[in-house]
Amino acid sequence: MDDWQEEGPSTSTAVQSSHTSSEGTQGSSWNSGGGFGGRGRGRGGGFKSFSSGVEENGNDGDSWKNSGGDRGGFRGRGGRGRGRGFGGTECNDFNGDDEEARENRFRGGSRGGRGGRGGRGGFRQDGESGGFGGGGGYRGRDEETFDKGDDKENKDGNEERPRVTYVPPTLPDDEDSIFAHYEKGINFDKYDDIMVDVSGSNPPQAIMTFEEAALCESLKNNVNKSGYVKPTPVQKHGIPIISAGRDLMACAQTGSGKTAAFLLPILQQLMADGVAASQFSEIQEPEAIIVAPTRELINQIYLEARKFAHGTCVRPVVVYGGVSTGHQIRDICRGCNVLCGTPGRLLDVIGRGKIGLSKLRYLVLDEADRMLDMGFEPDMRRLVGSPGMVDKESRQTLMFSATYPEDIQRMAADFLRTDYLFLAVGVVGGACSDVEQTLVQVTKFSKREQLLDIVKTTGTERTMVFVETKRQADFIATYLCQEKVATTSIHGDREQRERELALSDFRSGKCPVLVATSVAARGLDIPDVQHVVNFDLPNNIDEYVHRIGRTGRCGNTGKAVSFFDTDKDGQLARSLVTILSKAQQEVPSWLEESAFSGGGPAGFKNFSSTDSRKGQHGGSFQDNNVQSQSVAPADDEEWE
Ligand SMILES: Nc1ncnc2c1ncn2[C@@H]1O[C@H](COP(=O)(O)OP(=O)(O)OP(=O)(O)O)[C@@H](O)[C@H]1O
Image (tube, rainbow, N blue to C red):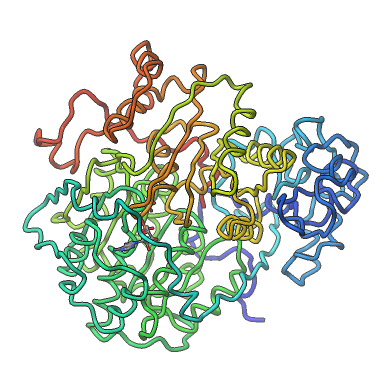
């Protein structure tokens, strides 16, 4: 076995982190084939995607209708846990073949299955990592302090974490699959009416067509096969800026094509400069590194890179947590020009000496404001400070997001050359105007029924339901399943295999309702999501903008309904009023009242500038009525 096949801790300082791993907590899996709660009968206790013939936990049991499951599963009326709750032996979905890992994964299992108290269903209250499943389970009060560093196993040598053995299914490599895309919507051409502002010295001229981008033949073909006929504004401006070798901080609304805006010029430049074709080597030196905050998002970016690089000698690779490191390192060794990764796993593979940084020419931070907020900033600083990393004068650093709090912008400047350009398409931090936003005043006790009414009305149309906590995600998913709405869920405690299955079931329409925490708020580009429901509003308005941006993408229209509980969401009222009015949405009078009757500034939306450098000089975009703030999402634990 090669040394790097072990999932153990890296010895490198590059991976030392203040985060502990969540992988271990994922161990208490609801895919264990064992009823995680209740009586722990080993089967039938799991949550099932309603429409699926096979439970998400991999059992072929009879889902929640099964009385054992009913008691042993989410409803958790069972209660005592005879110690077999995790019943790993019956699991048929466990990818690894390592018994020890399996044992570890289900550690705590013998104590599992206390079941909880009906209604809350199988949730452990004691914060232990075993217990309730639901993809890793509710960990009681510890939930809010969950660490995001899921890639960082066995931190400080404290607790031996299970080896991650999950290997995602091999990707189909036929052209139909690679270039599968959804159609742009009726409002695609309206993108051209959006005001664009580029600030900084000597910005290059925007392009109007892809022809003007002077892409090489293969890239041009790939753009055509992707169904791209004309560039979106962020592409019209972003492509020439990047091609001119400039650093960039770009802000454009959700779903408006930021990914291609950075991928195309990078790939073009690599091709033009005759990048060396990938070859097997124990150490790879990528020319580009792309970082994003969640596993699913980085995987999506990787798929886009793979699509645009199709038929060229440029080889993208992806690394992220929850997947066997050995598998990913083997993939890296086959050749790696563009490395896409979540921060933890990226630092891990760099720390293991598998990635050299001396040839790096492009560093891309997607969801840059998130990558630089207090959750990830230390990792980003570690990344740029890694041994051998080219300095910022010798590489291009590119940042993309739909939101940029001003303080984050100022901090981001540390990573950029002083002459970077700031590109703003539309209102910085504004919501996508193709999303019809509705706010509904609710009390916390009426939310469930109101949600049910909505999803019964939307029928098979795809709907994402955002909730604040992992526990709530499990609870609402179960509730909807019980009401015979085909539902699945994604959150940070679910195992990677389950997360991918959930997304795939949602994408395919097998489960048209996806209940998600903020882990799915940013970047995910899922076809035909017509509705977003904020069952719980986030405590940060930027998060709201990203969540509702899962619909209304690429010129398509979408709807977002948000439950506003005055007792809890008052601090967001003023920001919501601002967001709604800037997106030409109706502002309910009760919301205005709430906003101006004591809704404090805590969640107040910052539209204070396009480019923070302008603000410093009293620039024209300054709106002095609002305050700058960047708030890390409350559910930091959801991020990778
Ligand atoms: N020029 C284009 N023509 C047609 N479709 C496009 C074009 N550019 C991008 N798209 C498609 O639009 C969708 C949204 O693009 P993308 O995911 O890059 O948006 P984004 O701006 O990064 O969104 P978010 O802020 O949510 O991350 C994707 O399906 C993408 O393939």
